[in-house]
Every structure is written in structure tokens, then in C-alpha cells.
Length: 194
Image 1 (cartoon, helix red, strand yellow):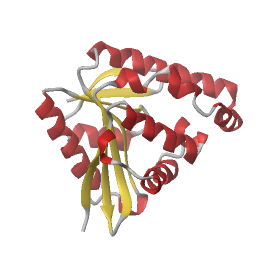
Image 2 (cartoon, one colour):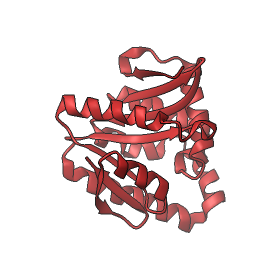
Image 3 (cartoon, helix red, strand yellow):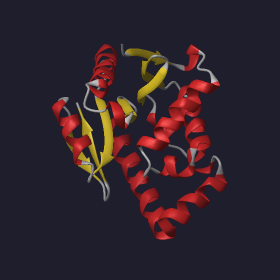
Image 4 (cartoon, one colour):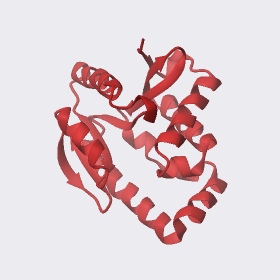
């Protein structure tokens, strides 16, 4: 049986849970900068999210993490220079995989996304990650987690905002089925809102 659990800053997430989230992130979102930078970086970024009033919706089954949706209502605290300068040596992995030109493109796109999101003036529920174990996809797990985030946004009277790669057609279709619509694009990303 799949269980959903919400973790906030005051929930007392333990080290092994953060590591399980980070491992799943790295395996299921392998091409993201965070994943390339490694499990330690992913763990650090999830702790940073929780330290800045973010939340994590965990889908678990038999105590195993099978899906994660993370969100914040204070995006500017998450998308900051602190995120970039944390674990500086991990950037060598990105340079090794993508080259300096690829790293520049990625960082430039992240900056462009952050600028477009700023138009909401932090009045949004911003979904920072949504992923499900590949062996458990197409079973409604992402929809369950997203429905939880949507209910949270409704109770806060905020729109849901998310970005995804413009070539991630599967994710774009998923968000459109959830009632989201495109409101902006960058060189590499599509931004959608409810």
C-alpha cells in the first residue's frame, strides 16, 4: 500500500530518509545538475529546502521511498547563490560530463527560469522536484503527490508553478493533464502554472 507523508522543517527528517530521497533523485533525474553533482549535493539541497520553509511529499511503500515531490512557497530563498556555491568541488563532475559550455548553458537557463519565476513575487507554490522510481511509474503515484501539492496551494490561495525541460514531453503532458498551462519558456525549459 502506498503511503504519502509530508515533511516540513519541523518534521525531523532523519539522515537515512534524506539519503534515500537523494539516491532516488540521482537515479531518476540523472541529467540534472544536482544529480551530476552527486548524492551528497542532492542531500544538502533537500536539507536547504527544508531549512527554508520548503516541504517534501514522500510516497513510500513498505518503508521504501518510491516517489518525491518537493515544493516551496519562498523560491528566492532556494534559488540563490548559496545553492551554487555549496559543495564547490562537485562542479568538476558537471564540467567533466557537460564541458564548460554545457555548464554555462545550464546555469544561464537556471538564471532565466529564476527571473521568470520572480514575476510571481514569491506568491506561488513552486514545485522544485517531482519524480517516481522508474519501476513504479504509470501507477498514479506522481498524480497522488501532485494532487496533494494542488490542495496545499488551494488552501494557501496560491498558484502552482513548475518548470521542466522543454524536451521532456512526458512531463509536460503530465502537467497539462493536471490542469497546468505554459506561461513562459527559456532556452531549455518550459514554465507552467495552474
